[in-house]
Image (cartoon, rainbow, N blue to C red; front, side, top):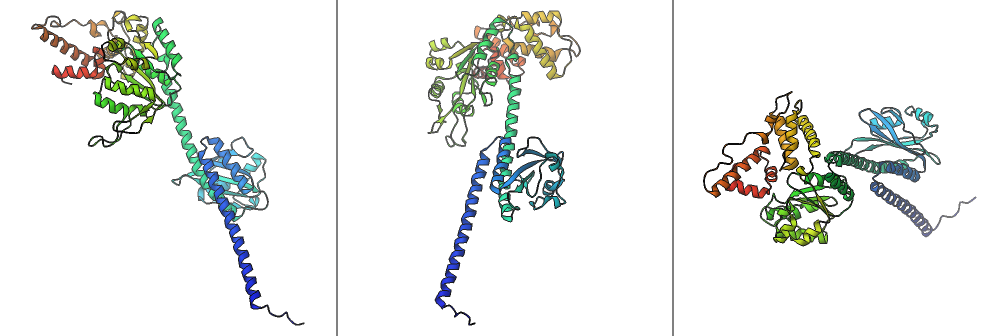
Length: 523
């Protein structure tokens, strides 16, 4: 039988061309499928990265990976480095936690080696840990297990998928699984970090609420009961609050308490003393400043920005200049702040709590305070009564302050004598709670260990100095002498704290600074 005649050269070239076209089409389909797969993996990783709930994320990772690879089940085992165990947080269709030694089974091998591991028949694999199947009642046939590492290379645990729907897992499955495991590790690390931050934030919020709870404010008297009742009612409101009261009554404590018991408690509480800074510095502190406004000045956020979604406490608001008052009013009206030297306003969500020991209506009449700002701040008015108007609270305050000071100073005393306690309860306390605190701190410091605090330890019962009311000289000289003596005594009482001394004297810190300079008082 004769062989067929050879094909013409053009037929051979045509067949070769067709084969090449077919090969290129197949290669293009393969590349397109790979590109689609990679695009899908990218979309999955973005989806995972957006999820912050830890348990939901782990469930998403296992379910989506099983879907992509056609696996029946997935498990994530996290490493406890201190106990050296692996434990399962999520297993598909499994609620209970599984825990085993970090060196045991295929997962343990992956942790130790740091390499991906694929097994086509696990019951023939000496590394397989059959105890898990026995515990769960599940029958594993084949699996891929990959390490989960942090961005810095630390071992988080392992990720495994079990039982391919048809046949065994392939090298291509392994490649996809490694890519998904790497993205899963990043998402898990971020979720763990977020969970830790949230836990820390919640713990600190609880601690602050305990420290600044309303129960920490002594209020047995009817006046204080009414005040605290109103304060509780306005906690979760966003309205501005004006707190008034004499120096030393605890306006700052009430402001903090309102914030830490409000729905803004997880956001900043930013206090600023308006009397402690000159006008130009106060403006920069409140509104912030842009870089280059002056030589050597860097960009800085202001207190209003820092307090976004939280509370700004404006202490001594009555000492604020009219120019700064106008800018604060604009912020309250527009809810926008512009830094000094800036052009673009920034939106802020801030609750303002202001405090003063001045009569703002008298300040308005004198032209020193803006009426429109007063009404913006005075949406809710809380007035703290002076200590002399709530004598029921004094014994409670004495005991609470005494215990706190003794604990802080690690000093063991036997308490107050009856006469000392009576003297403390009947003293008028012009400096209010702050003066009472200073008096008890002084008495505890001077008292003999294991002894009683007696009337001789109380400064307001000490014999008056012979020259206190017998100054010689002209009236200005006598006034200067009295001022000098009162300032020095206030500084001694407050251990050199100028802000506290100023409050005790009923003047601003800036006013105290000027008087000290004029009277040549060091400190």
